[in-house]
Image (tube, rainbow, N blue to C red; front, top):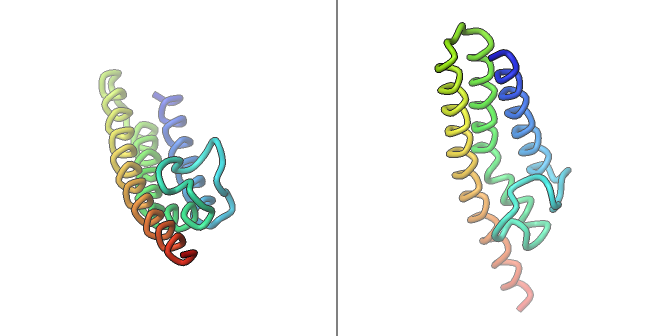
Length: 120
């Protein structure tokens, strides 16, 4: 469980770091990291606004994964319980980041459509 816990915690930190870098505009539209679909990739402004809107949810998801890793490190778990911690941590991450992606895409859509209206 030691390695799985460390990997979970590190992955959670990567999620949080990526969320922060995209929300601050340090990491722009790219082919590897960030929420990469829908209106989020239509413009640099939509990318930034969408990631800012999604940031609390992405941070919460990453934090849940870090917490799952910490639970695995400090709690003596049986082999079957290790899988449960991993699955629950990943499920919470996916649910929170998924909702954040929905919120972010909605915010990016508003910005993108407003920019189209401004050019007319």
